[in-house]
Image (cartoon, rainbow over all chains, first blue to last red; front, side, top):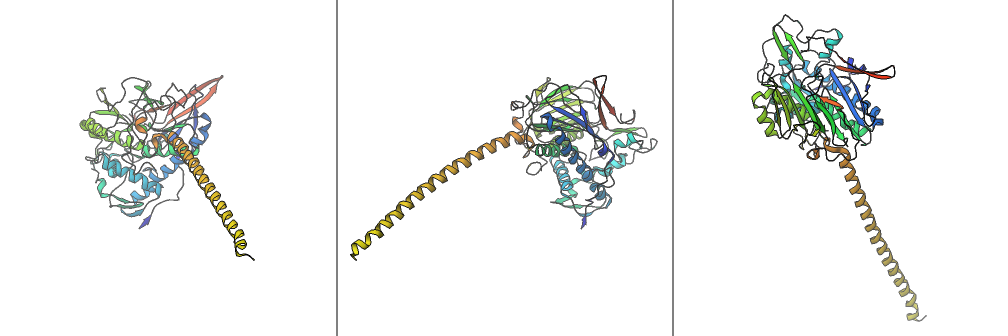
Length: 354
Length: 117
């Protein structure tokens, strides 16, 4: 038996980024943003005087998650696990929960998301944080002229056994928790903020566009813009989120070129290649952000079967095809400013998010 | 001493003890009832407050079905969007500064064009 890499605390570059207050022209809520986990984190809170506590609690959660589950930090517990070459491991509580959520999501989606997809992503060249690009690092893929490696199908999540904190990882399997980790981070953050603020008021946390809310929302719900592209100037829709979470997955973001191939980060575990279905962007609402995160990724991978899968899961969703066609499911509102009906119950947390 | 006169104080003592016992029992019953009512009231208030505070994010989002915007009477009215759900691009940093008395918000996207297309 081997113990995890708990205790290593060298901060990632983004952890030195301060929270920046975002002016909204509205003094009833306070909003702040900072870089985090290779993307950006945003908190919106009311009453506004809770902002300091909200930023501190969210920062603590994200720092801990980064140290537990980042595939790009050599000192993270997950990196240590991936480099160990298989075996029996005693995980820290945080990583045990993260792996448990990823395995539950894989079971729920029938393998459309799969944490054993790590080697496939490395083979495609997604072996470093996109944030490294801004610091003069090489883009994922390393060498522009080098073609992508041969596709590596995911070995399969059933090979990984987790019993409480005890993980059995077969040799050769590299874990990647990308389909659930950001959602898990948002879920953890809103709970930490509510605890830090004495359950007073309400909180929204967005981690790279995966949003969870808790507490008492603003009247009619938190106003949330839906964008099909990361840097879209005019959002596609404005929705209201009173409870639960919403998450978006898209093949338009985190793309890189390798040889003549343009690749993206959503990999079909069955083939080891970037998902090539008809949907460009999928937004899903669910009771928790990890659920929404997993479901939106699964829908991209499911391709032509996405509508059937989301309908069977009973989740409201908005899907945009490569041809611009928009499809709404499960009561997703058609107009602006309408509330999204969020179904109860989580499929990825055992007994509710912890 | 006359045995009957010897028994009178004893009977009086027993009667007094019975009276005390009855009053004690009555006080206990009344006190227990009052405490039970108070505890039940407090428990109800705590449950109601807990449900209002935790919302759908707790216990697997069990309050999620009600999350259609109708339960937000206590929150402020917010008209503008406070966040955007979108695919996670690369790091975006927002800088807020004041120039000539006006607030200027700058968003910097940390990825060279062409690398994240």
